[in-house]
Length: 221
Image (cartoon, rainbow, N blue to C red; front, side, top):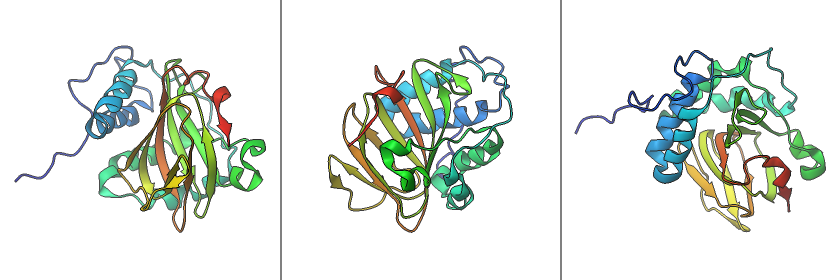
């Protein structure tokens, strides 16, 4: 049996509004689309089709971080695994382009707000504009419990590096999600996540009626 072919940009994929693919986020988004098509057939194909249709990134100022949890980014990137090594490498190449944000401390408490960060790449106010879906990165420091919450959007998580345990409706998974693990949350489905010895870096996507404005429909339980 021949070795599996590495995931990568599909040469036959549609190139609607980004014909030149010159912006710095294009290689990363191509890889994301390829992984989602391979790992999440229905939902992945939907998000991949949306990725193919986004426009080029807006002109960028220097990115800035407002999230203390980015101190754990290097240790998360170092936990790359073969299943997602190409995506993790692409994230590393984008680190100077990412605006990392922290959660609202009034929702999560100050301790969690200092240990979790996200960087939106596609969305209404993100570098790559879209009012149809959101896509970005979620970083969680070791030994951090992100409390149960819900939102109106459909949600997908693809773990890129590290590991985390997840709860759905109050029931915790018996084993952690590791690199390559895929997780789906339905609209308004309560869920929580917890890291233990290792940090976790994941890709997230939001879509459906709750994805834009989306964050306004977010609620911690």
